[in-house]
Image (cartoon, rainbow, N blue to C red; front, side, top):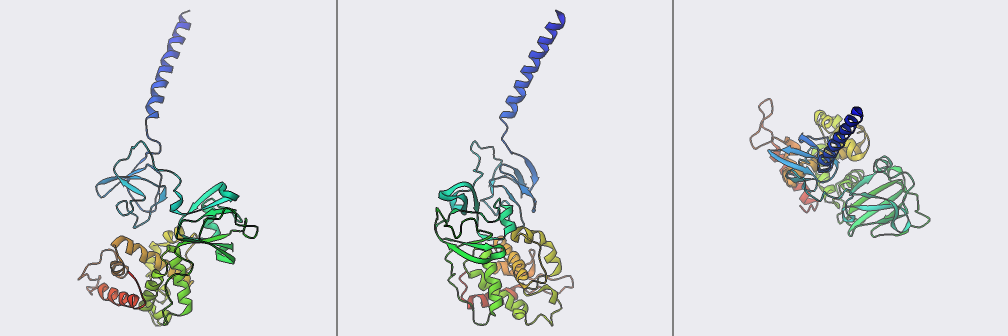
Amino acid sequence: MTNKKFSFKALSLMMVFAFIISTFYAVLPASAAARGAWTPNTAYAINDTVTYSGSTYTCLQAHTSLVGWEPSNVPALWQKGGGGGTTPPPTTPPATNGAIFYADINYGGKAVTLGVGNYTLNQLNANGIPNDWMSSLKVPSGWTVEVYENDNFGGTKWTYTSDSSWVGNTVNDKMSSVKIYTGSPSPGVTKPAEVPSHIWTYVMNADNAYGKGGDFALLLSAVIKKESSFGAGLPGSPSAGDGLMQVEPNTRSAYLSQFNSKFGRTYNHSSEQDQVYLGALILNEKIVKFGNIYNGLLHYNGGDNWYPGATDSYGRPILANQYADAVYATYKGYGGKN
């Protein structure tokens, strides 16, 4: 009898303890991990909290951080404050945040949202889209979606500027790569006469990767003219190996992981297209970080810590302002709008 009473009381205590523990954990916010100081190249989940520049920020969208995406710079990704709100942000972005691709007709089955950018088959796979997929899609107003039959934007191309509840037998389950950008299929810019056609192809591909509508292509053309005279100056350059945009080896190495993340493959140093893609990635980061094109050019040439009067390790002045003046003037002469 004594043993039975002891067992019953022990069981009762265990049940009360379990109830207290379960109640305690039930009130904890899901996925509210304190991740310490914000760092680049780190995967963050919704409701993660970080510290940056003396403040606490809460993650609004799951993402992998990059240099230039500091919490204070990207309010779409981070909200200032410790979080703990009663309504967490949605895990699926609304339709206006990207084109939505559906497995079945009439917007049925699995749905995947993709933002502006160029997506090879590997990148589609990474976003949950298998090869030869898609039967319907929704396209935000003012956006353009180009669906390609083959990987790396090859084969037949089908262009969509509005929703399609059924893409038809010709396109159904044929998608192997995709380009998504804002604006019309023919950006409102004209190739400058002095820019070689192959260079223009490179810069327009980079422009499409960032959804700039052609203006970024003009800026990249101006940079390439200054850096390498459209490739003509490379044989006599001491940094000839750094290609059309003359990205220095140390800088190139620092951005290889970001290049892989953006373009879904390893950087190919011998590819002129990749040289332009890498320079575009760095220049776009500087423009975002420093607020405008001119400031972006200053720091693309002089580095993040450049200031008027700065000198290099040999005491020579770093004339980033002269560089920015020349490139910006060329860009405006090409019809640049910003």
